[in-house]
Every structure is written in structure tokens, then in C-alpha cells.
Amino acid sequence: MTKTDNRLKNAPKDTVQQGWVNRLSPDFAWPYLQLMRADRPIGTWLLLWPCLWSIALASHWQYWEPGNWSTYLPNIMLLALFAVGAFVMRGAGCVVNDIADRKYDALVERTRGRPLPSGRVSVAQAFVFLGCLCLIGFGVLLQLNEFTIWLGVASLGLVVLYPFMKRFTYWPQIVLGLTFNWGALMGWAAITGGLETPALLIYAGGLFWTLGYDTIYAHQDKEDDALIGVKSTALKLMDNTPRWLVFFYGMMVLLFSGAGYLAGIGPLYYIGLVGISGHCAWQIRSLKMDDSENCLRLFKSNHRLGLILFLSIIAGHYF
Image (tube, rainbow, N blue to C red; front, side, top):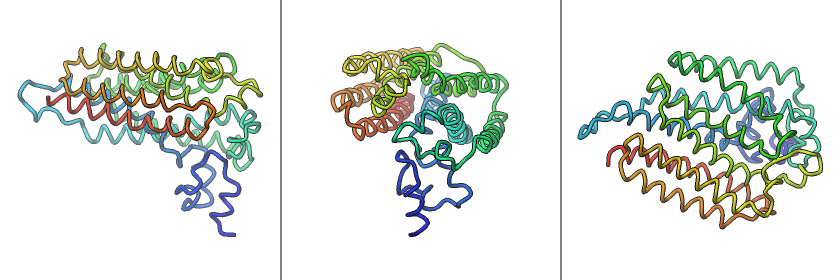
């Protein structure tokens, strides 16, 4: 049996079986890369897109001059810093989540093979790894202005709070949305040094976006969650999920429209929002709540939604 075959035999069911982590990572790093979900980049993208939207929209707000195309170029270094920060801090959030949920994960078929419940990483080792990730994230944060640094520090409370919310409320996705879209505030602040209404609307729209996609995601585990006493919007909404998705995604588009209007963005932005509305309608029509593979596919498709909005902001600047 090859090293890869042995790893696949012991890997959790929710890992990317033939991904680079299982095939190429050195032995000492393998469980830690799994712990931070390095083989599943969708989480990093969902954390990063609100940052990039806000950076692009704030750049338009701050620098655009009528008739002068050269004034709009989002700072490439700033985009790169936020990309590194999203990768590292998403990993840190996963470690916090797995430390808090390790006993629950051991009871769920999809997650019992993860590094902590399987014993491949101890709790003490996970805390040391978490500290390393946070140090890297803090190093990235120090490259930004003072207001943005304090915004970043303020987000840590939400990161720690989220894993415990599923034990007390059927709406833990609200806290997840507040956490995952915090970058919309930080991206704007990194450009302008403060916060204006468009940033708050992008943040609120991102919250409803998260309520939509993570409700779809939660339908994968609803049976196990019900058995072990973990709560989620999937269990709360059940067969009413499609109607609630219409509300969640409708509010998202409405709030994004308001952000663009107040930022003075051009009409191609709104054409992009029409495309996003079509994408959301496709998700709702295609949803099969008892089909885990279908739910995962629709959840991952939100990466494309994030890309469409980012390109729409850029197009809306020029036209």
C-alpha cells in the first residue's frame, strides 16, 4: 500500500480524497493541513470575496474621477495581503471550530476521521498550531492602517463565539455570517481609513449571503445533528428552506444594490446583480435537501457568485 493509499484509508470523509494535501504534503504537516482545511479552498474564497468586493468598491469611492480611467486600480499588494490573511485566518477558525466540536465530530460519520476526533492531532498540538496561525495573521494585519488593525482584533470575539452557538440556537449561521463577512468592513477601512454606509450595506448583504449558502451546506448533516443535539437553520427551516432562500438571497441583492448606488457605481454593476439573481434562482430550483452531494455542489457554486460580484464592481467603475 502506498503512502497516499494509506492516507486515503485514514482520511476523514469530508476531505478532498485526491487533493494535494493527501498526495503531496509531508507526513509531519499532513494532519495540520487537514485541520486547517487547506485541501478545501472554498472556505477561504467565501471569507475572501467580501474583502475583495469592499476593496474594489472603496477604491471606486475614494479615487474615481469622471472621465479618468487611470484612477482605478485596486492595490495589488493589498489584495495579496487580504488573500494571505483569509487563508490563514480561515484555517485558524477551522482549528477553533474543531477544538470546540471534537466530541460532536466523533459522532458524525462525515467528520469522525478529522485530525482531532481521530487522535492524529492532540488538543495541545492544535492550540500550538492555532497560535502559529494567529501570529501569521497578526503579521499581515500589522501591514494595514491603525483603524483596520483594531477592526481585525475586534473580529476575534466572533471567531471564538461561533462554534458554540450551534448548541444554543437554531440560527448559528447568523454569527457565522457576521464573522465571515467581517472582511467587508476591513477591506473598506484599509482603503479609506474609516467606514461609510456602502461598507455596512456590503457587510449586511454578505450576512444574508452566508445565511443562504450555509443553510444549504447544513442540510448535509441535519440527520446527525438532530441525533446529537446540534442546531442549525437547516433543522429549523426544513421543507421551508427554498422559501427562506428566496428571502435571504433577495435581501442580499437588495443590500448590494444599495451599496452600489451610494458608492456611485455604473450600470454594468447592476447588470452583474441580475446575473447573480439568476445564479441564486438556479441554486434554489436545483436544491435537493436530502442529497448531500447536491447540497455540497450548490454550496461550492457560491465561489462563482463572489467572482461575478467582484467583476461587476470593476465593470461598473468603467461604465
